[in-house]
Length: 381
Image 1 (cartoon, rainbow, N blue to C red):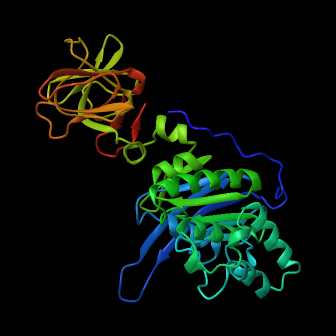
Image 2 (cartoon, rainbow, N blue to C red):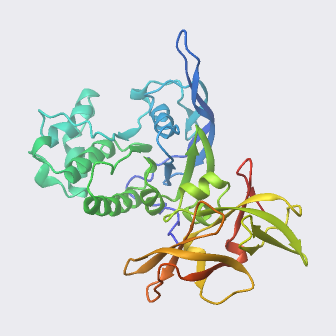
Image 3 (tube, one colour):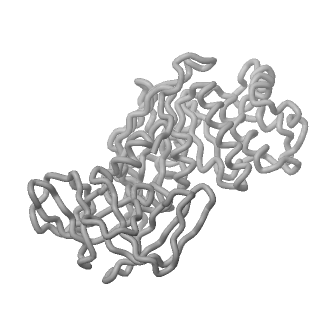
């Protein structure tokens, strides 16, 4: 997988505003009388560079929005530290942090025009030159024609642009976006996603985007923090997370189609590690070295890394095609393995086609065969 991951330019109109954001041992515990306490965020540590765009990616309930709200000052911090530059802000009220926030629900005021929505917060804080600031951001975001309209007259994409402008107009040191594209249809989501990436690069804000959509995270972010159960499971570039997953959760959550997961037994053969599929239907070689002979493991192979052969290969997994989908740019072959409940999905070249009940052998390059501890799910190397 290849995703552009270079850092944002270090120059731009808001260079002075972009600051480093540091989270150290950040914890959020909810407690109520008569009930067991619940820890939603369990000691997160992240260092986000000035001008960098980081995505908090994970399933619903993993703690990503709670983390965002703690940074914004909308949730109290149970313990830990939040620093913007060298300034500790974890105990400051939201109004004194100077952070720009774009909410999932847009949070626009229906009776007010777009212009007044943008001016509202500036006027409340008695900011000098508020009208000029709104005029400038409107011009930069090409939304001058929207200024006299009310939210009811805007499309979802236009509402998202207004919500973003309201966050940007404050020239914040840190910009937080909570599911910014969730209410858009597929075509609008792609367009706004591209625009958001360009704007973030142009303005140079230190930005955190919360999302459960891996395509959104992989396309937008310089780095991803993949979260589960209140813990950051892996923090790295899109390429690092996709090609070098830290554990089975990360491997399964990031990637479409989802990674194939099979039970296996590791065997040492002539100094190499060979993984026999537990059903006895073949084996795959891997570059993993630190493993004992006979260990029970979980094997992960991505559909994009698999190949199909109609020949009886010496290595590989013997399977039977159950279903084939031709998707123009590529195909998806789902094949079954005798003795296993789950099949193997293989992404095939566009020119290839397979028939139901056809016997095929699934192979993969050793460096693309991942092994995970069968109990903990941790990556074996």
